[in-house]
Length: 218
Image 1: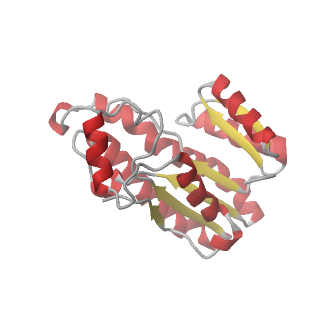
Image 2: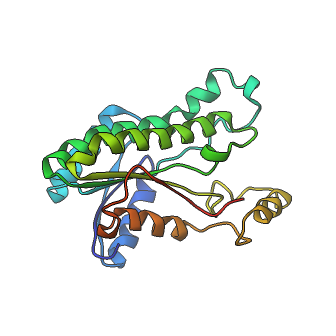
């Protein structure tokens, strides 16, 4: 959103600095905080540095994701695959825990968790990823009920297949089959997801909580 004060976090400091520069070029103000939000201490540090930079925390968007451990069948995935997917659901929980403290004092907040359409529909060969993304939706519904009395809304966006680095390596035949399942006939773009997130963070969405927005899919 133009003019927003934003704190970006991730493990790739160079990528964060690039994103901050792009935000500044569009009239925003962005601060980079390198860290792994799948760790409690890093989630707490992210919240602390957000408050130090801007004095308050109005919006939290949990959109961290990984691609490890997404191949193989369920019976081949014994421990390691599921451990690899754990940060997908742990990071939103840890960030929510950290950021709801200042939000409750403000009696205002917007939290948006990024899940996935596969968390609703399932997908072969991705049992760990699907379980984690389904868990994000359950977390969203539970926390929404806990925080509603403090004027904090909690929602989720469940994108379908989006044109990102995670889908860039898709086999052309797989891509064609996926697009055939999508009513609009194309994969989504990061901007499509961003617009949905921006709406849920807006004042216009002040009466929406505990819901998920599913992007176009079969």
